[in-house]
Image (cartoon, rainbow, N blue to C red; front, side, top):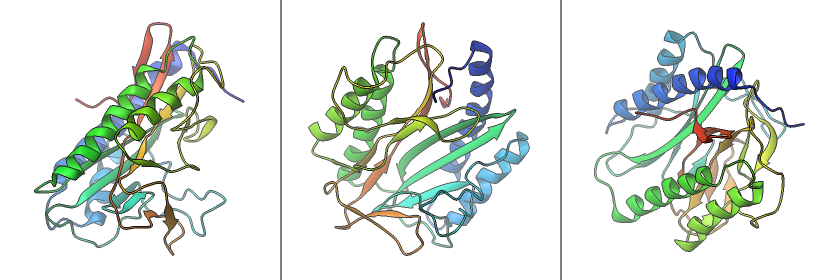
Length: 255
């Protein structure tokens, strides 16, 4: 069932979303050559704690996972697409890093992700990340009252496929509200004019995941990390977005 949020609830979700935005900004600032992924996780924990928020990631265990997730952020490096577990790995010059972060505060959840390069960026990585950001922007632009879910999916997929990138078939965005994952699913590829009608009060986590080498991916032995099968790089971007009569409102917008 899809819960339509009131305007007051959307305002409260914005406050939670801003905690996520602050955590991602702090992590991005701290990410440098020689910094470990566990240190980045600690940076995010400090932001959440200071804001009186908890992490919906920490201890999360969906049906596919062999163990609960042990961190407050996902850190996916280079050929890891999403769900990477922070480790002692220390960042190297040229690493492409995707960081996914969530927060829970006041009964509401927020979820967002960014991708960036540490140190010197390869042109191919700059293009990949830029395309992921354009795909997210296109999906948000389509998230308006009167459109359908397929319009969001088609907007994202058109940008991704048009640039020659792959898309994971079984993963996409999701509804969000009192819990991090709610109905409805938000695919990253689809047919325009099809699917669930978009209504005022729907709140969606829209999240393109792009693979440089094609659609294929595999799951690491940890049961969490999704990785490209050919070693090509990947990028992940995400915002929590409220659909309103005034247009899409990005609740996790960063300065």
